[in-house]
Length: 361
Image (tube, rainbow, N blue to C red; front, side):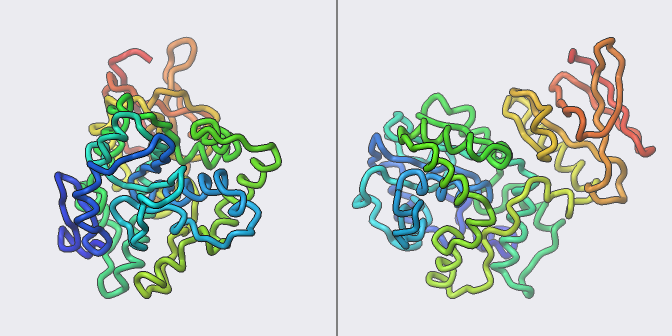
């Protein structure tokens, strides 16, 4: 993967790909790829739940995958349109085809943009993407080529990684969603309500399952069971295709791991860029599972921290307006955090945050 700057990256029409994994002929042919109405494209920014979603879809579609009578890894049940490492002939796959991609909206097949085929787009809290990506890249690089977290964060926030800038990827798909037959899923909400997610996907792809079959899909889609399932954890893929035996693609599968590695200073820097980049996008971002029950749709979420010296796993504060118009503070776990594009943010690093808004709540 990326060893530093653009040394291991290939830029195609403004999008960075891994030179080690990509195939130029596939990229060049992607826009003219002929889709079918039954095609299911799983679109994500890297480290946003691609393999997890692929496994859920395969469990829904294939009875043999659910009951264990078919020992076919998910990497061979479908293929990536730009990283087809097994050289699967996608044109010969039976319908419905499951196709994975990290491509931006403007590089996918033109017929997909004409709503021929379905797209499941999964987005994730970008701080957890950063942390997951950091560990993944270092597992490829080895100790001699590994980078520290600060170095990788700078590359990530400049878009100098495979997948380019995460904010552009999410914004592109979100703002052009009307051009696609698309289902948007939030990674963190999938974690919170896996059964509900399975039912959403079933409805979207037009597959009816019994209650017992849905239960089985949910059971086999948990992180613990996926990590133990050689058909789903893609460990053999790294061994067979790259001769690598130390790659753990499924690492933790949790929400909020960013608090275990990011300093508050790093987190604030990330927040400022996030707010600038995503201020006009009304997607809900969840930074910790405790927020899910108290968040509102259509609002951006912003984590706040206590002080600059401690890690972000410390007690955090929210600031919100009470019914009588007063500003109040409290634990983040008990109230929602709202980011208002009309607001002006001020902070005092005295163990608390003070927040002043010029706009309405």
